[in-house]
Image (cartoon, rainbow, N blue to C red; front, side, top):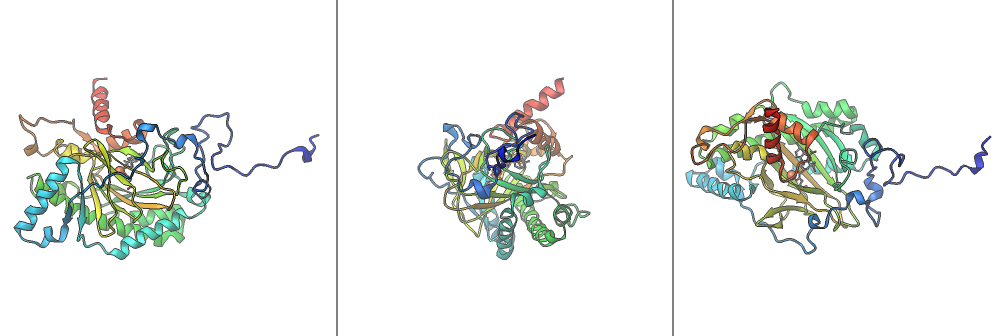
Amino acid sequence: MLNMLTIPPPKPPSPFSRSTRTENEEKNPLIFDASVLQHQPNIPQEFIWPDHERPCSSGPPELVIPPIDLKAFFNGDDLAMSKASKLVNEACKKHGFFLVVNHGIDSELIKKAHEYMDYFFEMRLQEKQRAQRKTGENCGYASSFTGRFSSKLPWKETLSFRFSAEEQLPSIVEDYFVGLMGEDFRQFGKVYQEYCEAMNQISLGIMELLGMSLGVGREYFREYFQGNDSIMRLNYYPICQKPDLTLGTGPHCDPTSLTILHQDQVGGLEVFVDNKWHAIIPNPDAFVVNIGDTFMALSNGIYKSCLHRAVVNNRTVRRSLAFFLSPKMDKLVIPPTSLVGPNSPRLYPDFTWSSLLEFTQKHYRADMKTLNAFTQWIISNKVN
Ligand SMILES: C=C1C[C@]23C[C@H]1CC[C@H]2[C@]1(C)CCC[C@@](C)(C(=O)O)[C@H]1[C@@H]3C(=O)O
Ligand SMILES: O=C(O)CCC(=O)C(=O)O
Ligand SMILES: [Fe+2]
C-alpha cells in the first residue's frame, strides 16, 4: 500500500503550466492567469515574438491623423461637409485611419464602458471562464488565445460579443450576458447594449461621410449597413514585465468593415505607415476609426485597410473598446458600380461577411494579408 506521507503535496498550479505535459497543446492549453503572470519576471516562450516583429525600442513617432468634426459634418454648411469629406478621402486612400470628435456620445457612457471592463477582468480566472469563448466561435472570454494558437500569443484578455442592429433583437447584448453569467450581469449587459447602440449610430453616420467622400452619395453605405451584424470586443492588456519581447495584439488588418475604437489614456496602438510603426496618441474625446478589409473590398480597393498592432507595458494595465462594424452575414460584398470601370477593374471576388468570418476563425489567423489569402481561398475553392 502506498504510504500517503511519501506522496508530495500537489503543487499550486503555475500560471505557465499545462495540466499534463505529455498531451498536445490543443488539448492542454497553456493557462494565462493575468493576476499571477503580470508579476512574473520572465514570460513563457509562447508569448515571445520574433525579433523583427517586436515593439520598437525607442518610442515610435506619432501618426498625425485628421480629427473629423462630426457635428460640423451633420449640422454645418456645405463647406464644412466638403471639408470633412476631403479629409476622410485623403486619410482613407493613404492608410484608412482618422479620428472622430464632437461625436455626441455621452462621456459618462464611455467612462462606464471602461469601468465595467475592470469589473469583469479583475474577477478570478475561474469566474471569467464562465464566459469562455468556444473553439470556432468568436464570442466570449479569451485569455491570450492559449487554446487557439500555439505561438506568438498576444498578451491580452478579450471579451467579445455580437451586436445586431436588427429591430427584432433590441436587447441582444443584455440577453447574452444574463444568459451566460446570470442576473447579476444585467446591469453589465445594459451598459454594453447602450454602448453598442451608440456605436451603431455613429458608424452609420460615418458611413454617410464615407459614401460622400467616395462620390456614391450619403445614403449608399448607410443603407448597406442597416441591420448590421457587428462584433464588440473589450481588450484588456495586463501589465507585462517583458513588454519588449511581446505584443498585446499582433500586426493585423481588421477583417471587418469599420472599427471604432476608444483607447484609455495609457497608449499602445500603433499603425504601420510609410514603412515604419507610428503611435496613435490617446485622446479621451475622440474615437479612432479605421477601414477594415471588408470595406476595402466594398470600395474596390480605393480605401485602405492598414496594418496595426498594440504594444503592452510594465507600468499599467491598458484597456480599449473596439466596435467592429460588419454587414449582415449573407449580404454580398460588392463595390457600387460607379467604383468599377475599365481603368478600375474589380480587385476582389464577390463574398459574404459570413464566409470571411469563417475563414478568420477556422482557417487563417488574421494578419496583414487576410484579404489576399481569402481571395485565393475563394478562387481555389471555386475551381475544386
Ligand atoms: C472577425 C474578427 C476576428 C478578430 C475579431 C473580429 C474582428 C478583428 C479580428 C482580430 C482582432 C484581428 C487581429 C487578430 C485577432 C486574432 C486578435 O488578435 O484578436 C483577430 C480576432 C479574432 O480572430 O479573434
Ligand atoms: O487595443 C488596441 O488599441 C487595438 C486593438 C485592435 O487592433 C483590435 O482589437 O482589432
Ligand atoms: Fe484591429
